[in-house]
Structure formats: structure tokens, C-alpha cells
Image (cartoon, rainbow, N blue to C red; front, side, top):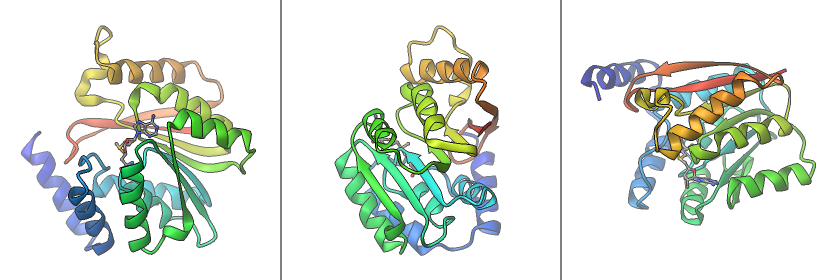
Length: 220
Ligand SMILES: C[S@@+](CC[C@H](N)C(=O)[O-])C[C@H]1O[C@@H](n2cnc3c(N)ncnc32)[C@H](O)[C@@H]1O
């Protein structure tokens, strides 16, 4: 990683984010619990938070909880009677996340559903849940196209769908890659290119999470 990217990220976070004991405690608990440090960065978390507020989101769906770092940012954006439903396959990750969310004081707004997201998404659809205003996708990249398809079915017109890690240090260009995450990302872009129900863009990012990027799409 470029040291400059990292230094600039730290500078930006120092200027714009300030101290945040609840988020710091969540990262500490993740480390103590042996969770991988693959959460969004602080400035990315704040971006999710601001997008959710700008969208007036009351109901948010997240795919990929880990220890709930991004979940905390998202849950802080919804009103007290709002809801974040977050999907996680690993029961240990979900347990660490539950404690982090409760410690951060927003646990009451967050429901963690444990299981493979394709199953929990199908269950949400079958239950006829009220539509979501924003969907953040950050789980197994192989399934990103499937997750976006499911998200469209669960989102209201005008909702935002955000997908993380779509550049992968430029490896998204490698058509012949045998990396399932690269292949999954390329399937995502093929799908987005021909999906009439979405209006999408993608932005490359650099920072403490190296060179990557995110898709931002609006449900028509
Ligand atoms: C990159 S981490 C999520 C990071 C989190 N969004 C954050 O920024 O704090 C991806 C998470 O997705 C979970 N995951 C992987 N495959 C999954 C699946 N099929 N269904 C649900 N969750 C899955 C992993 O266990 C991991 O906790």
C-alpha cells in the first residue's frame, strides 16, 4: 500500500471524524475475538452514514456484518424507530457484533440474521418485509450479482444500493482470473451493465484499505 494513501486517510479522519470511543471499542473487540480486520475504513464508514442520512433512510439492509463496524455507522443514520437488518453467516462474528452494537447504544435498532445471505434474503422476501431505503453489500464477493438482484426486490424505488470492494487493486480487469472474488465482481458489472431497474456508477478509492472501489446504484 502507498504510505501516502494511508497518511492522507489518517489526516482526513483526524480532521473530519474526531474521537469515537464506541467505534474504537468495536475494533478492539473484533481483534480480541479473532475477527479479520476487513471492516470498512473510518472515512468509508462516515460516507455510508452520510449517504444514509442524505437518502433519509429509515430501513437499511446490510449483507456482511463482521463485527458490526459499518453497522454502527449505518444504525446511527436511522431514526430511533428505524431499523437496520444485517446478514451474517458466521455465528461468532454475529455474537461479537451484537455486543459491539449494544455497547455503542444502537443495538435496539439492529437485527442480525445469522445464516448464508442467499437464504436469509429469500426469507426476507418470503416474509414480505417492508422495503428498504438503502442496501449495503459487503460479504462474499462471489455472490455480489445475486445479492444485487435480491436487493432490487427488497428495495423501494429510489433506494440506494452500495457494493464494496469492486476494484480489487485493479484485478477487476483480469477476465481470465481464477480468483472467484474477481470473477464475482466481473459478473456483478456484467449484470449492472444490462440491468434496466438500476442506474449505477462506480468510484475507485485509495486509502488504508489500499486501492479498491465501490458501486453506488439507484433503484429506478
Ligand atoms: C468484509 S466483512 C464485512 C465487514 C463489515 N461490513 C464492516 O465493514 O464492518 C464480510 C462478512 O461477510 C460474511 N459472509 C461471508 N459470506 C457470507 C454469506 N454467504 N452470507 C452472509 N455473510 C457472509 C463474513 O463472515 C464476514 O463477516
